[in-house]
Image 1 (cartoon, rainbow over the protein chains, first blue to last red):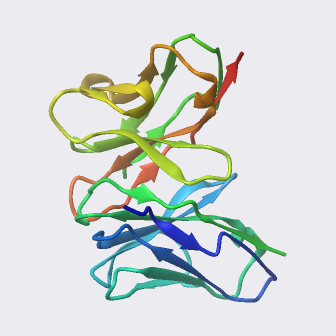
Image 2: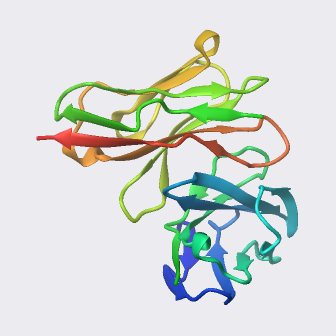
Amino acid sequence: KAGVTQTPRYLIKTRGQQVTLSCSPISGHRSVSWYQQTPGQGLQFLFEYFSETQRNKGNFPGRFSGRQFSNSRSEMNVSTLELGDSALYLCASSLVGDTDTQYFGPGTRLTVL
Amino acid sequence: AQSVTQPDIHITVSEGASLELRCNYSYGATPYLFWYVQSPGQGLQLLLKYFSGDTLVQGIKGFEAEFKRSQSSFNLRKPSVHWSDAAEYFCAVGPTGGGNKLTFGTGTQLKVEL
């Protein structure tokens, strides 16, 4: 089975722009979670989608949003980018959606200039 | 609120030596516990997990971890470290119901000396 795929792998944006990141879960997985990883804050939970519904949300501003499609693929969007949004954004998928094992993708490295 | 503490930011061991990475958690009930490993520029790979049952769990790459409720710990061990084990290791705790939010520790960077 193919693993979790994330596109693009690298992205450079400037302050004030917006960005959309994509995540394709493992086939059959219905839960997709997003995490932000930075040297200063570590790994922080952004949100989780299950069956196209946001089920959990972390403590991030409203500039961070996401959605899930009927095929379980997910996108996250960050509007009005700030320098502090530079991070590795990791997507994880799981089979059942209720504290099942999460499998992570390679991440998207976002750099905001 | 749940939390995870990894007291060691950096650990250096010689190849062939044993390894123990510490993890302490704070959670009201019996947690779901995980260890992940991250190589530079990569995502997270699951090493092992504890949900219930036997408190000693075996994982991939020769790793094991022991859940000790009395100490709120879930330490990761390996009897003989290989140079390829050099990476960053994260302990995480998950909720026991209602979603997949993981709370991660700050990670332990493992260096292996040849």
